[in-house]
Length: 188
Image 1 (cartoon, rainbow, N blue to C red):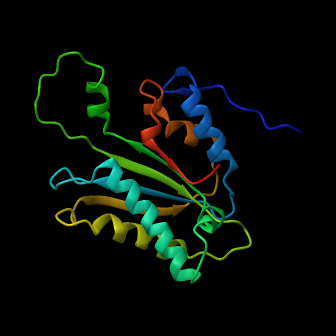
Image 2 (cartoon, rainbow, N blue to C red):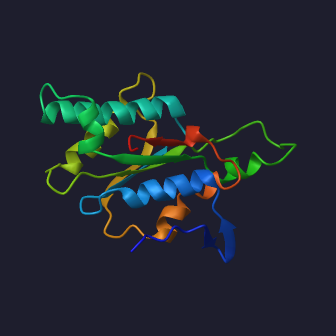
């Protein structure tokens, strides 16, 4: 039986057609092994200097790499994507996202509200301590000089069910402003 690919979704009583970025994200999310699937969300503080998207991506990659290095000494870097496949979407705050569409802005003071939603898992046969992995990623996010206090919220949870509305909800900003920059993955 072939899996059905959803071409639209409903959010707040409105039907949205998925664009190519959203479809790609949806397919990748559905392909992640489900048994050990975890969800990490990270929000930056509005009162501190924030990380750039490049710094956030580097910190996630470095956290995963260093966790795998600690787990398997002398590992092959290609093994990371097998052992810990992940898919991450970056979003801006709602207010900033809505302001991007306006031609004239009434304020010079912006809160970008950059945050991420990271889905990370492992194959069923491998034992991974996701609490330690999550702590490693958070450590790397806070390791950048002058930005140690930039994280205001950080949480890691096991995901029991990864359904269509939950996946599509995390692609909502890609609907009008699709961008490869806003996605980070090590899956094929």
